[in-house]
Image (cartoon, rainbow, N blue to C red):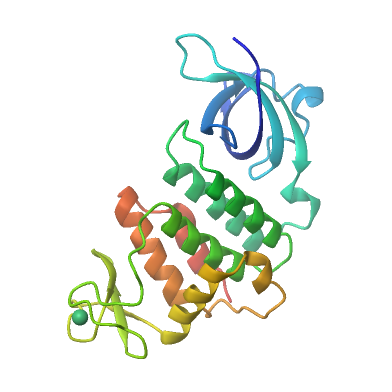
Length: 247
Ligand SMILES: [Zn+2]
């Protein structure tokens, strides 16, 4: 079969047999693809440094008849996350991006909007600040996956929430007004809802350079993570890790 060439983001690798790696790629041309990189642990020429998670690469791979896994021929690094210092918060934030892409995207389905989002957020994660890019990524991934209802009205009564208190609950979609909130709901601040509205209107670069402490938008992130976990019906490992990072 013919070799395919695509820009791709490396999501995960697992050791397979002695020198091989099982690699999950998010390719631009056909979405998530799993392939085997033969002798990857030995072959610096074909893969040198290119299989670190979140490396942006140009990948050559081919599908094999009656086999689920592609054969990964080679990867050329276009941009490596290791080019700048990897602090612990940054490492966790990068893992978070990889986990969301891996868990939320279906196999073999191109999604250019998500690909562009991932590239822009990875660029935003070059520096030491993680909370803005992580918030932006969680928000847009939830929306692009179709899991985000209108945040401006109560999902129960339809009343506009602008200027009034809003609540969310781990077991239900969207936001609720004070009268319709369920027991043990959490509140999402007006400030965070405003941030979300701003993030829907502007690219991630527009938010770079402003101070963004962990507390800013933490209620929004909690709401988004709950929505994502409800839809994939499992816990996101990196959500707990992010939560434990000190501000
Ligand atoms: Zn209501």
